[in-house]
Image (cartoon, rainbow, N blue to C red; front, side, top):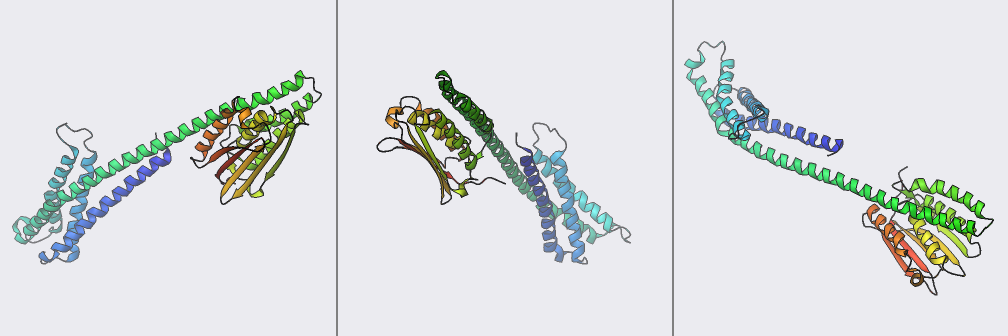
Length: 362
């Protein structure tokens, strides 16, 4: 169903059409009065215009009346036919009523005054020759308006359904990401516990603080580069405590990029992949470098590692997190985002992100 602002928009179009009806009725009546006023001898221009404007208003009222009444018609009678007939029928009666009103107090009754009868007949004849055609034109315009309104309503409803489907899809993707991070991090902690490492308690404390900050953001539609970098810093510090001799890292970010919008866990997905599929399988460990730069209205993020590289890590689900991230980027940025992977020499992987720079609303 269209939302309330969409309904208000349709109502606004209906009100605009009503005003146009009034303008057309009064404009057409005034134009006819101006054209035929020289033929009404003994009457001023104002008197002629008043009579034609009155006739036009009555025709407009008749048009609107039969547009809504009666609510149900026989199948053989179309409503537009009833409207045209209704307008035509009221014209002679309206002309008679106008002349009865303006001849009150005359010495000669209306039915005995040939000039008055001629003027009334002329008013009725001009109305019968023009009003039905104007009515038909108005009906065609009304039909076009109805078709346009229906198309607009369908388009608004389709846009709303597409937005709801997009939101649902994003929530589904985020639900897929959440257990991915949670279980991988818990698996790292389990390794320390199984090995009896004295760092297990400290790592657990860092993990609790990290999850308190990370898990709520999984359900947010967007976060900032600054928040993402903080999560990346906490995550890498946690991983460094697990393997202090095998993991080094550095973080570099342009200050102007800190307030830019991005999907939750965007950078963390790349860093987690670098740790799990690059550094962990490598006996001597390696280094992870994270850089975020702002150039020409676009944000460029890069996560590189000196781990085992693409070939050695390609067999164990490397594409799961990245394919999910690719899809999320396409949904959030409407296709205007790229995720590229490249091998580094002598070994390692570089993941590059490129997306529009959008600042958060303060």
